[in-house]
Image 1 (cartoon, one colour):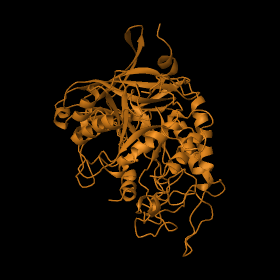
Image 2 (tube, helix red, strand yellow):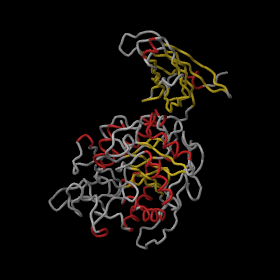
Image 3 (cartoon, helix red, strand yellow):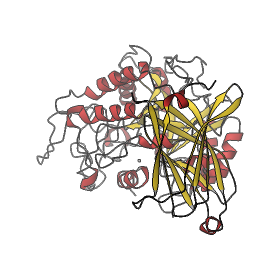
Image 4 (cartoon, helix red, strand yellow):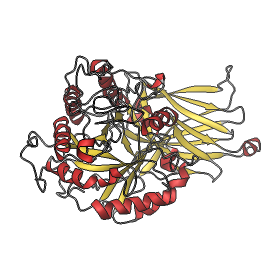
Length: 525
C-alpha cells in the first residue's frame, strides 16, 4: 500500500497519529540531556555545496525525512514523483512543487542543500523513512550519513511496515543498522534512559510506524506482541530506544516501548497532544508538529485536508504542544519532505503550474523558505520555555465495584500515572485520557471483593483557586475509597482520604470532593 494512503488511515484510527563527542546541550528546568551536534567535514565535500554556517542545530529537534525520490537524469528511472499516473518532472504526485524540482536523493548536491536547510531550521536529527534491509531507503544511507555529518546532522530511523516485518525481524533490523552504519559519525546515539532502559549505555533511536500491525498485510496485534523483543533489545549492548506511534499508555506499560510519538495533528483531530498526559513518567514523549496536510492529487479523503493558512496551522500545532505543559524529550517536525501528503517544510516553488494548467499550492504569504524560518523561531522559544514544576502524589484506590475512575477536575493538573502495584493479575489499573482507572471482573465485584491499585502521578498547580477538585465515578456496585499521600523524608504520609458509596441522580454515578491546595502542595508538619 502506498505510504500516503496507509498513513492517512492510521493517523485518525490510531492516534486519536551517543554522540561521538559525549558533550551535552544545557537546558532549563530539565534533567533531559541529548548530545550536541558537531560540524565535521564530509569525506569529499564539494565546493559548490552550501557553506556550513550559523549555530549548531539541536538534537532536541528532529524532522521526518523521506529518501525515496529518484529521477531519470541521475538514477535512470523515476521513483515516487510519478506514483499514481503522473508524468514528472513537471507533473508530480503532490499538491506542491519543490524549489529543487523533481530531485534525486542520489544527488549529493540535493542532500547538501537539504541538510543545509535543516541546519538553518535548527533541526539536528532526521528520522529517515526505512523500508527494510537492502531497500533503496537503506541503500541511500551511506551518502546521507556522510553529507549529514558535514552539516552537523544526525540520523535516526522511522521503521516502516515493510512486507515481512515482525517483532523478530525488528530486532534483526536494529542489529543490522548498528553493524552497517553504527560507526558513521552521523549515526544518532543517545545515553538517555526510559522506564525499560535504565542504564546509560549508548542506544540508537527508532520510531515504529503502524506498530498496531506487523506489516501492511498482517492482522492487528496487541501491545504485548512486541514486549519480548523490546525486553531483548533493552538488555543488549548497545541497547535501543524504540518509540511506538500508538498513544494509548498500554503500549508503554504492556508493550515495553520506550516512548510514544504522534505523526501529526489534522484539523479533524481534536485530541491534539493531550494523550501525553496519560503517558507514564519516564516515557519518551515526542510530539509531531505539522504545517498542514494536503494530498488532493493522490486522492486522499476530504477529512484529512488541513490547510496551512499562511503558517497559522503550524503556529497552532506549536501552541497546542506548549499548552499541554509536558516537556517533550524532542520535537519532531512532520515533515521535511513528504511531498505526497503535503506536510513538508522544504521550500516550495510559488506560482508553479503543470503543462496542462494545474496550479500547485504554495506557502501563501510565507516565502518559499518561510517554514524553515518559522521552525527556527518556534524552536528557539522551545529551548528557553519554562515548563511547569510538578510534584509527585501517591494515590491509593480501592473499590468493590467492577470499575471506578478518579479524575482531577479543577485547581491543578496531573499526568504520568505510573502503576506502582495492583492487588491481582485480574485487576486492570491504568491512566487513560487523564483519568486513573481501576477495574475487576464483575463476578468478583458482585461477591464484594476489594480491588486495589497504587499510582504515582505528577501534579502541578494551575489555577488561582484555593482547592483542588477530584471526582470519583464508578459502576452501580459497591463503593470506592481514595487516599492521597505525599513523600516526607523517606516516608509516604497520607494527607487526605475520601470515598463514594452512593448513587447519583444522573447516569454517571459520580461525586466530587474538594481538597485544599495546602493539603496537596505544602509539606505536612
